[in-house]
Length: 259
Image (cartoon, rainbow, N blue to C red; front, side, top):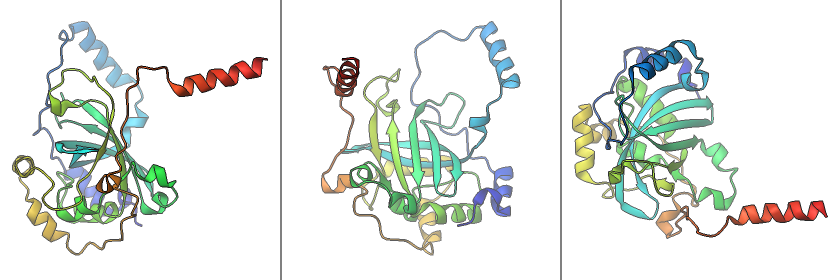
């Protein structure tokens, strides 16, 4: 596979692309305004501190998620992506693309080569990207069509593991509640049509047009253990009022070793 960071077309796309600042955050959080002193400290930190881990987040993808086990709770997700190597990506997910956007969660993206190495139970936490790519629902705003098409050729056979920690679609003011495993759409008729139309209008694009443009992208069979929600196998976090079982196990081991 070609590494898109080093192809000429992708490099030019990064120089000319934009596609931001058209989607505000869903929530306004409580708290006092930053003081003048804090603004100065932040400016100094921005100029002086090294931020190497953030520099690799140089691609922007816009798509949609729903809560694993509840397809009717859907939201738009703005992914800022870092490619770690040829087979592994990591993304920070925001609820908008402006300077007030809130971090909703993270997504890890792997190629089918790595996905095949996962244990069966682990695979049930992951979703495929084939439909998202082929349907035109997943877009890379601000880059030329030829560069986006090449990027989608790479993503079409990948799998994502997504955790949301701030449920801004529910108009929460703070990141409260349990983290949630998220999924991606797999067929026509699942996504909220108005949500999709609103996205297309903001970015001045056509999902239908992108679907047609991607008809030539080849597809591979999806691993039957991915998208486990389709078979009624839901995986979610559970908040328990009891002490964590792992802690009890750890304490038991420590007690035995001290005897």
